[in-house]
Image (cartoon, rainbow, N blue to C red; front, side, top):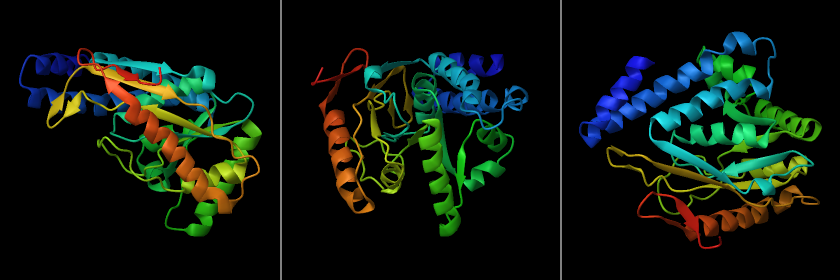
Length: 264
């Protein structure tokens, strides 16, 4: 790790392109190391969301070494009396840092992943140990069973399922259309949708990875009580408008990349 950090320092003194590749290489190596090195400790409590707290702490430290500072606002909006489906705008592999920031703040978190990730050991084992829910996307029946069990986890454990409803990364100024999976899950579980907005990564560009700020805002929940599956399109549209409007209201500071909302 010392050598890797040294490469980052070296990259900071050379061209932006070299710095770009070195920082992403460092992030990748650090992510795998932080996720897998605590496996012996995770084995004591398999499928416990708290197992991810050590990897999350490691990722937060990595972010600082890469020149990134994170802020989390809106903690007062976190759903407290039930589980929820947390929907987050998706920009880059660096969104792992966002999950690392939210994991200790929101508590009882989990994520959904395609089953192929489980076989990428040792990372897949680590993901299973911190409670990742694996879904067979190629088998509709098994996928539905996994979704149903996720709904039960949300209700019984008051868990928070973190999801990226856009389904793919986008660095565009406008949020991509949402897929419906997260919202079907929220309605089936009769739990709120918790929108989370992450400011645009203005520190990233074409072969450019500068220092900057990742500003995370937890917005008030969107209730689903009484909704049925026929209401999913309306729920998707309502949540999209809330998140899109808030993101569009953000204006980056020219000096330090801190995103400030016109609503603040």
